Each structure stands twice: as structure tokens, then as C-alpha cells.
Amino acid sequence: MTYLTVPISGKNLQSCKEQIGSAVRAGAEMLELRTDYIESLNIDKLKELIAYTEQTSLPVIVTCRDSAQGGQNNLSADLRKQILIEAVKLGADLIDCEFANFLKDDFGNDIKKTLAGNKKTRLILSEHNFKEPFENLAEIYEEMYSVFPEAIAKTAYQANHINDCFAAFDIMHEYGGKAIAICMGPAGIISRIITKKLGAFLTFASTEANTQTAPGQLTIEKMKKLYRYDTINKETEIFGVIADPVGHSISPQVHNACFATGNMNKVYLPLWVAGGQMDFNSFLDNVTTRKWLDFKGFSVTIPHKVNALEYAQKKGEYIEPVAIQIGAVNTLVIRDNERITGYNTDYAGAMDALTQVMGISKKQLKGKSIAVLGAGGVARAIVAGLADVGAKITIYNRTMEKARGLAGEFKCHFAQADEIQGSDAEIIINCTSIGMYPKTDVSPLPTKCLNASQTIFDTVYNPLETLLLKQAKQAGAKTVNGAEMFINQAAEQFKMFTQCDCPMEVIRKAVLNALTSKI
Ligand code: NAP
Image (cartoon, rainbow, N blue to C red; front, side):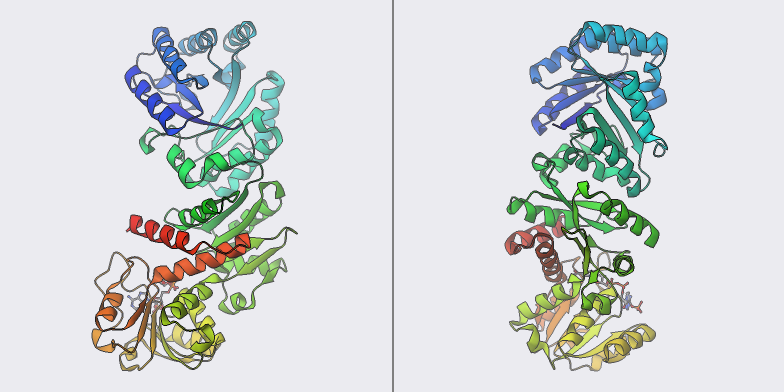
């Protein structure tokens, strides 16, 4: 069992008790009493707090952290030792002692003696680095076990890049329930969930965002509701969105909601892969060389879509031909034979959104005159899809060079952005960011260009109804919003990840909820 542990960090007994109450209500499985947070700490306060925790029936760790390793209130070594010894005598389930202090004769020996006389209490030996990963992580664990074989060995270090997490995963894979390995900071967030899959002794969570005791700690609510912590086990397959930055991504909400509906033993995580091609390659190499992590698929977004294509190409993996034409991969699937396959669901998502609203098949787009506004990444994916079915495309863009280049590749017409005013296209697709939050009072098209015979598709999804779409509706045109494209591309990904049909109502609700909560 991996205990979902809530650190209790009140400055006084009253606030500790309140935090304990919140932790129990939130579903904590273990409490860590960070006694170093308590002002004017003494043995009586410890006794009262431990007695209070007995009402909860949850196992308790008593910690009195040294300020050299992130402790509060600069407590003396003598008081810290007394607190730990007393906690053992009071029957605490575990105490956490810094390894460096445990090695000191006048500290460690007294604790060892007390533990020997009180078999109920287990020892956690810990070491922290709030700046960077440990260079010799494996050696630290070996040393801890050699000094005290029954110990649960713990490290917590700052992950400065997601690739720093893999050393901790190796430790948890090797030692399971005898180890704790926490990667702190935003780059280490995934370690807090993956810990459970790897069966480590515990993972920490806070009850509120403001009661975090370490950077990157997630709230217990997020762990349970978003990442379905309670369902994670050894067999859980891992998926995620690779992006930089990744915090704004709604994909974890969307894919986890679909996995939950199908009771699937899968979890979808935000994967913050900072940097360029090399960092991206290292991340995928780290994942693919550790089959036991069960990473099975990725959504890939800014800035890694081209990196994903190049990675798969260099490895000689299968890439869907349209994705090669588009020059970008937004979906990677790791097959059971460990081969990676690359796809682009952006174009399919856009085509589905458009044809569903128009009530036609993709083939029926053949010969239709379509104006595409923009020549960036999204325009490229949509033009590739439209060219594939034989639509009559004209690309309009502010920067003519880009329009010319894209039109040349896909053999279509191009013009300066302003010239769209003279267009008689049946379908107009906005692939620029004009109208996107926060500049929501602008539209890429004057209202005089809009009429009831058109279909207007705005790929912008924040806001859900852009000014362009509002004006198009007023003119009587059919409208397609960017959220529909997002929903359809995510549904395609879901099918590739799971080989199952996507629960469309669930995905639609999840996307709309996630988008409206962001706006
Ligand atoms: P991108 O590669 O940066 O391309 C941006 C395009 O917008 C370029 O053609 C650029 O013209 C044009 N543009 C930007 N600001 C402009 C302005 N003020 N006036 C005229 N043209 C302007 O971006 P992208 O990845 O293609 O994304 C474009 C939009 O698609 C995003 O803003 C997003 O809202 C939307 N999107 C939707 C989905 C979905 O699933 N619905 C997914 C991804 C993106 P220049 O070439 O002249 O710079």
C-alpha cells in the first residue's frame, strides 16, 4: 500500500487539529505531524497532538525537521531528538529522522536504543535537497539500508526537469514499499502520482493549496478526483500531454474523465518537458527504456510537435502519412511490441467538426471553395486535411511569404489577408489567433463579408464563442467553434490510446467544463 499522507503543519495545536480534521474528511490515509512548525514546541504539545490523532485511527509519522533540511523554527538538536524519542515512547507509528543526524552518535544511538525497546514504531531515514537532484541517489539508499536495515529510506529532491524524476522512479521500482522518493517542484509533479503505481511507502498531498509543505505537492482533492489516485495500482497504464508550458492544458481533465467513465486502469498526466529536441528525446528514451512504467501514449503540443515527428522518424517508427505531410505529430502511441507510432489528430478533429455541423461527409468537401485565414501550425494541419479530400483552398495570411510557402506545398491559392474581403468562399476557417482571449473584441473578418450561405469555422476556443462566431450567427451563417475541433481531436486520440470508441458526451462535457473554468 502507498499511503496518501497529509503533512500537518499548523503553527499551534488548534490549527493542527483543524488540519487533521480536514485531512480525515479529504480521505488521508496517513498523517505526518510536522512538529517543527509548532511555535514554542515542547513535549506536552507533542503528547496532546498524538493523543488527538488517536481519534482518527490513521497511522502517524512524527517529524521534527532540522532547519538544515527544510525544518521550521530553527529548533535545537536536543529538542528535536527529545521529540522523536518521546514520539516513539508514545507509540507513534513512524518517526522521520534525517540520515545525517542519525549518523551522529549522540543523536542516532539514543534513537536506536529507544526504537529497540518500542517495536511498534518504524524509522524513516530521510535526506533532502531543495536545489537539485542527488548525484548519487542509489548510493544514498544503499547506505541508509546498510546503517539501519529495517528503515524506510526516503529522499526528497528538487526536480529541475521532468527527466530528473527517472532516478527516483528507478529507486521506487527497486525497493517498493521500503522506499519513499519525492521529486519536488513543478517538474516533479508526476512523481507524486507514479509513486502509487510503483508501490512506494507513501506520497504526500495537502488538504489546501496553501497548506503545502513542499513545492509541487498536489491537493488530496486533485489527486483523488482528477488523477483517480484510489484506482491506481501496479498495472495502471500511463498517458499524458507533453508540452512546455503544460499547466494551462485541459487535456488531463478531458482524458481522465473519459478513462473514469470506462473504468479504465489508465491515468493521464501533465508532462512538462521543458527545452528542445534533445530534452524531448531524453524524455522519450527515459520512458521507453523503462517498460515497467507502462507509459502507453502521449498527446504532444507546443513546442514539441515537430520534435515528436523527428524523434519517430529517426527511430524508423511508423508515422501516419498525413502527419508527415503536415510536418507535425500530435499523438504518439507506444504499442505492446514497444514500437512507437505517430499521428496527427488536429486535422481529423477539424474535419470532423466541420463536416458534422455541415451535415456532410468528408468526401463531400471535394470541390468546395474554402478560405483559410492564417498560415501557422493549425492552418497547416487543416490545409493538409482539406487538400487530401480535394477542396478548393485559398490561404490568406498577414505574412505573404508564409501563405505562399504553404500554398506551394499543398497546391492551393494564396493571397494577402485583407483580400479575404473579396472572397466568395462557401466555408471560411479562421486559423489565426485573432479574437482569442484576452483580445476578445476583435474579429479577423468584417461583418460585411458574412452571409447566410456560409459556414464559418473559428479554431479559437477561448472564448467559446468568439466575436467572429457571434457576428456570423447574426448574419445567419452556420458556425463551428474551436472547442468542437478540440473535442474531436481528443476523441481521436482517446480511440488511439484505448482502441475503444470515445464517450462523446463525456468528452464534450469535460472539454466545455474545463474551458469555462479557465476563461
Ligand atoms: P501559429 O503557428 O503561431 O500561427 C498563428 C497564425 O495567426 C499565423 O498565420 C499568424 O500570421 C496569424 N496571426 C497572429 N496574430 C495575427 C494578427 N494580429 N493579425 C493577423 N494575423 C495574425 O499558431 P497556431 O498553432 O497555428 O494556432 C493558431 C490558433 O489556433 C491559436 O490561436 C488557437 O486559438 C487555435 N488552436 C485551436 C485548436 C483547437 O483544437 N481548436 C488547437 C490549436 C490551436 P503571421 O504568419 O503573419 O504571423
